Length: 308
Ligand SMILES: [Zn+2]
Image 1 (tube, rainbow, N blue to C red):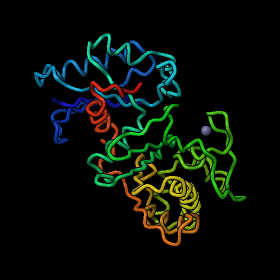
Image 2 (cartoon, rainbow, N blue to C red):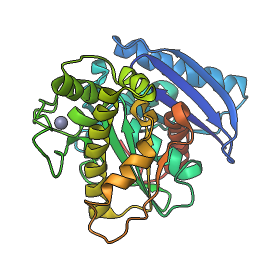
Image 3 (tube, helix red, strand yellow):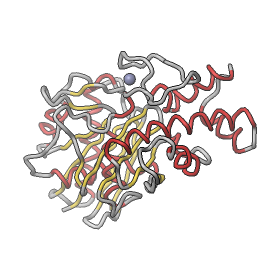
Image 4 (cartoon, rainbow, N blue to C red):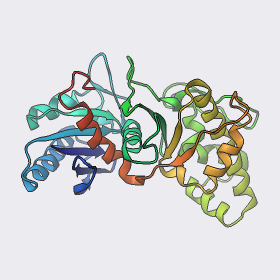
């Protein structure tokens, strides 16, 4: 059986088809018609049907990663930044048009499943994966299985507050209604906001990265404070669950020095004399989300545990 995966992003929608060994058979990317729910459903169905025709394959699993969550009580989409999805029975509507089972998951969960299956977390019993990009999400994989939970929010670490907060750390308002969520400090947007508070310079995270790589002292200091916050936040994860590996994905995970600085800094906050937890970059990079969606469909295909 082939494994079809779709990554529904705010600007692009991508399909990948993997064989049982994880080899890519097909990959295609189109623009997301993000302001029309019906057009999004049609786009996905068209991608799936044309891939199935091209590969002459009707026996496939289908997983879809979405920028949001599926309410476990109603089955409807919630917390999606592609807002036309909110309140919709996305799984049901896709299944009706495709006449095929669909498994949905949050995009951070897809990253986690991808990296745990055949990426930077492969071979580790427990994997905690973080996306630090536009937002700040996370996902747990234990013995190859994605962990969900009764509220379908396992790994939603970005909406906890910062631990061991000090006077430098801003209490920025978060879209979730709280103040000072990790997402408001650790996402790309959060890095920009907090750096602006500290230096009165308003520029994107990537620009701080460029300046730090050129040796600029202000940029290096901004990033060192960022690394300390990330280290404190991940120390809290280690104290709670002690994962065998932590994997970082998303645009901010490319910051220079992050994989040296954070493990050096978290030593002071983890409740252990030594901390041996590896901190790794996502191996599949931008492909992780769509690959994880493909593994997701296979893992839950035909199972009573089907999510969403
Ligand atoms: Zn929040």
